[in-house]
Length: 374
Image (cartoon, rainbow, N blue to C red; front, side, top):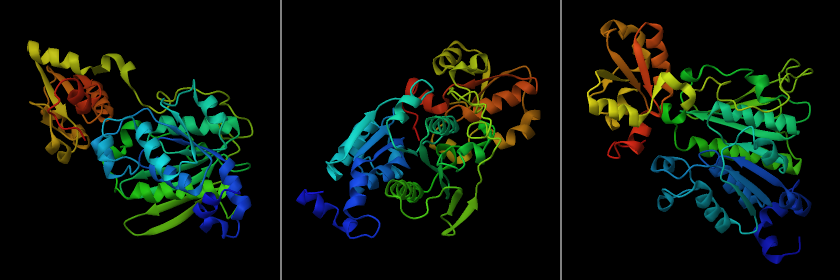
């Protein structure tokens, strides 16, 4: 490292035992892939770029939304509607123009995961859903890459390092996911805005330790962070010899798309769902139906589809006696996950029911722009 500007930029690193010029050169040649530049990916990308990581790969296919700004600190108000990658690239380039940015405006899938991950040294998982987490895990294990896992919900966070030689993988901790309807995402359950900053920064810290070869990375340990109590604790994780991916006799040897594996049904749910345009046509033509909004009361205060009847999902089993088995019911939630669980419940109880595909969020974007999004 002979560039005077770099000597000044990284001066506080160069004086650190375990870093110095040799360590800074390791950072300069490192290649880190960040899956998602949202709540977790934002602080991770900022600190890795600031630290002098030579190449950052960013994967994200979404656009900046007003609801992101409470926690996704890479993006600003002026970036609303802009590609998250474009927004992130502008901020990171300003922070450290010597960091090379490789932008991947795609959704991670079984078709592209192996190729994308193969060219990087370390992966940071900033995803917010089970299908992507399992895909990242399996792609990293099959490709021989370590990845830094992070997860947030409400006031709690988790961090660990998976895929390191001899260490466990994500499936050693969670061999199979819980049913999707039992796991609310951050949009449904909420998240303290500062929490992703804490967890994402911890992820960046683990990545730097792996690159530099210093300290004790969270290999075989799951760090739990409780923001309300300002406490952390470690949980030991061992590699599972019977793990389907990293075990002694693995049964998962190629990548698949994990929506079905994780119990997430999308547009292929077929007769269980009704598209917003189709529902609008039903309402316009006078089809006799009733909308059952299974969100929480605070969500319906933001906005509802006119004529909806509020029955939170947790109360629905006890409210079946209030429903008419001769009617068609359309269940509604934020983005279609809880409403599918409600539709399945009603269907199993003998009611004719459909779930609104994409929930009130899709209804707002496709039918009624006046309905607030969140």
